[in-house]
Image (cartoon, rainbow, N blue to C red; front, side, top):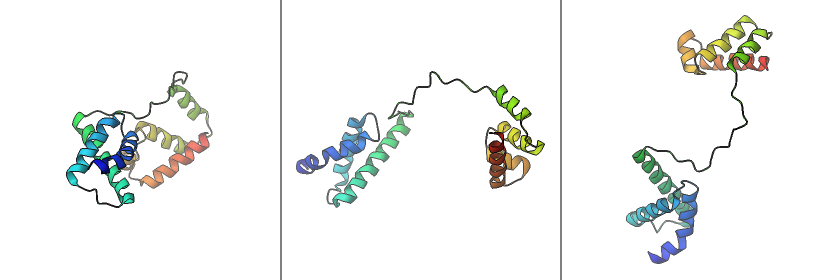
Length: 142
């Protein structure tokens, strides 16, 4: 076990580093899991994949257990970005050269929160048609 661990420890840590912030704990859990299952006779290429699957599943189990979500990468800062003004969009739609039907497609899309399934249930048209019509109207608006 000691020889095997020395050989694959860096691989396990690097895989865990790409999955979780607390990669040391995850790497420890992966080593314990691999020791339990005694899967050390797997060829090297398959072992890399197996280590990834074990690490991913253990991490998901931990997230489900803790009911938390950690971010590996921080989201970009958007301090200077201003919120969109919905009244500006309404004004753009009213002043555009869209047909009444195209305006109705956009209004329905906004009223349903962009949910094609809800629009489909509401008016009985397929999602493909809804998507096509809304994209055409929005591209015309640009």
